[in-house]
Length: 399
Image (cartoon, rainbow, N blue to C red):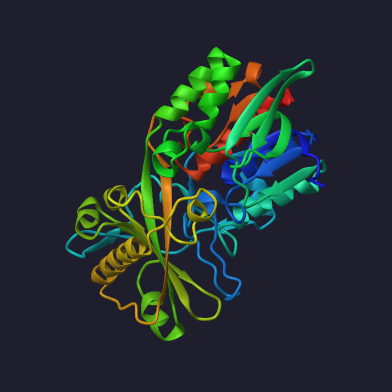
């Protein structure tokens, strides 16, 4: 017999930084209603996730954000709580820049490496994992569901108020919730049609049935947000090859615009592993990613849950191109290295983003958070944290 559809006071789609921070922020403010957190990935983190391997327990690769920065004079409230529980620690690795002539320079202000620098303690995904632990320690029901694709949003007006039913790709009900929060743009953006072949934009379809001018405005702004993609090469080097990489005078290398044009790389991160190996993450330039928008890693969520069909030969060509660029730039070999491809379809939102005045649509019982909201921290982890805290304040009086 199929189990009954679970009910929740609040459903949050996306367990990236903002989704996890929203749960922690609501709990820290005393709200104890039931929360259902649904995430397409294998675990929390989003672009602050960490890649693990069941066959290789010592492997951990921070494949999205190797660090995060806080630039505001008044940091998000959650930052202190994370630091106190040792979920994050200061990033102290040397940062250098490189131009097209291979001249090393000091760090440049690229928006992501200035201000106060932090990293997840042990691994970057500890940022989100500990936000969820913080939320659960304070009571109330918090159910986490990873590897779960939300494909349809079905609102229904009832005598007791509006209810949202979230459905999977086959139309099966995942959860019914009194309030819904989207912490990303996939369900509101045309790229879901362009890349995955969906026949509708889920939030746009839901908004049509609700006829709520506030939601219509929010949906239109979310759908208009442009973003830069990123293709990341993930390399794991054996001990005998790792020493040369670990001897480099930097842990994070920023490529200047001329270097990006020459090699097609934006940033390179060297990450020591506990057993003497190291991981290297080479983040492509926006131009390189734009030329390969339809290429997905065979292990990606897009391939496994969104029914994208990766082309193995095309994936190999991208891996080869990024690996060649990495060896050309560093003049270091990749002999014996294991390689993976990680692609972010909307890695860096482009301003202006969603106006904070559309953060909550009360008549439709829906809210939005994430680094795609305009304001301080836009496009960065700081913005994801701040937007979640601001949304929590507004939701308290409505939940």
